[in-house]
Length: 336
Image (cartoon, rainbow, N blue to C red; front, side, top):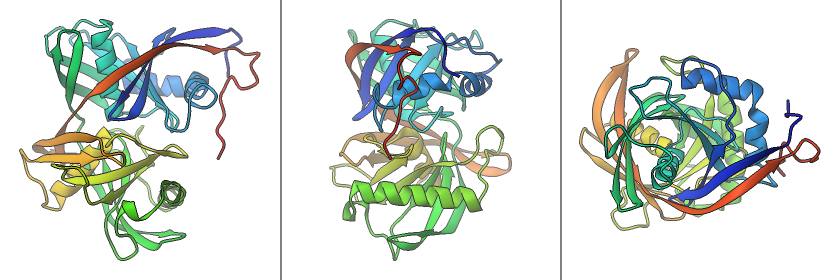
């Protein structure tokens, strides 16, 4: 339910590898719970109108992503982050983390307990990050992501316009349906973005209708939310290329941190990557993230990896966003 009070939100605008990040400095809703996983559920149940109001039109757009930052739930950690975007309140967001930490550091909104390192609480779990800073500019952020794993292989799904596809589903902070080269699909470059978006909605709906995806250790994380289309790289030094669909109309402009983690987990499971290997992932617009397989683990009896993702972000502006209950579009809207 929308608040009956007019709220003015102070925001810092940035992007990571081309994809937007809007940090909402305040006011921040008071969230209940002993962890960010609990607080995410409380936000979804009570405050989702803030997400839709600030992410959807007219305040945002189909690709909009953002975040709130909070004091950590555990004093040994540096900060807690809640991710919001057009697709919902995600457990984890790689490009969002890189952008949010860059903003927090450059704007001196947090003071790291250990210079060059940050312990970050997310709804998906603890993420340990490092950063390289020159004077006031954060040049690069690396983070050790949550355990990532291949959840399902070779699932058949009917896709109007392409025919039957085989997809793998992997987890890297969110569940991703990965569409690799096959008989009815060669390369993402062969198709328009509008085609990929339309097909992604069909694929995601079919998978969630016919399959059940639930995190091995956290039943609150469930459902396939993203579709990752693959292709040959076009940038020097890139290992592979991807276009990630999220929300209802969005193709990620960045290589996608959790998507890169998911794809690395898939490649390790198939013997294409090993411990210590780098995986340079290219986005639809040619921007790059560098992934590294830090180690292999077992989680709930399932083989998994600990991935590291490295990228950079830029602050591009400051804004005030007004959510007023007398505004007929206070909750935002999408044109689908």
